[in-house]
Image 1 (cartoon, one colour):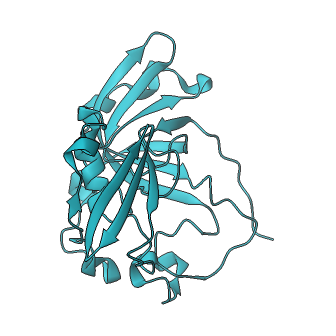
Image 2: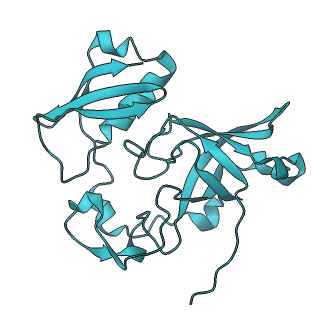
Length: 228
């Protein structure tokens, strides 16, 4: 039996995504997405964050809390490969892993000293669901963490992918002004699984307290409803 180790949840992140559907496939793709990290009471010590604001970016180590399971598979089907081709789990960032641990690079905007919550981190560019447990936070070091010559396998074919988005003015007005740019960028990433291409299907995306309804026709994403 594999050795097991115990880990503590040190914080939770708060984002505009109450569900997995629509979350960017990688961190940093949508800089307009704002989020906050609130520490658990045991870790609300400002001394633990002393010097953190001298870094512009952070690594978040977190748990795929919606993918915890007792079993694992050595092969997975990445959505960007159409959901049919299998590759090794360790050659992907799939949530279905022996240990459901995620890694995200985010931008640190500032640290707030909240009167009741202690230090709160304000971030942009996160790709996490609201309430995701944070296991650790480390500074991003550009001179060692950035490798411009690195190869990205099948992800190189889709890194520039986006779909045109059309939002009627009367629906756009229902979206708070400070969320419009982020919503448009989220939709441009095409939240649908790659193997779903029905032009008649209406999809629902929960975002920032809204339910966004959309269809994709002729390779254009059309927003057809915004419900509060």
